Image (cartoon, rainbow over all chains, first blue to last red):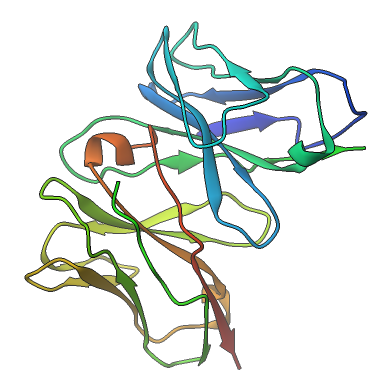
Length: 114
Length: 113
């Protein structure tokens, strides 16, 4: 199993451009989520999904859209990139079980908006 | 979701035991306590999770007192490779499973030779 795969690993955007960060997991997990991490900070939840067709907002959703058409994929769309969105983005997945309730994270996408 | 408070940073030396305490005064009855480890340029990695008393696995131990208002992550005999940021999370396990994790500032542990 590859686990959680994020693409691209690095991206530079110009202000106003749009793009999609990809996240795919091959563990058949119901739960997926997106986080951003700014330098020296903890992760902040952007959007999350508890299953295909279901999404909800996290702590910092403004400027981002998500959709969950399949169990495996949970793309994050930046509608009009701004310098304030320069950050490292992490995707995570997990499933509801009674024990060992861990989340699995991808390696991250480092985004720079100039 | 319960707010957590941890030390911003800690220093240790190789071979020592490290204890990182997390305060969570408003923990709810259904909440579990989960710790993650994050190395530079990597996503967080699950270390341990518990509800009460003591939990131990091959990596760490988690001590939770009866009132559950705090918890302590114990790393036995740390090595240089344990240098990382450690996050304490408190919440309903339904959401802890990658659905809705709320991270605090974390504790940056630096292990020196």
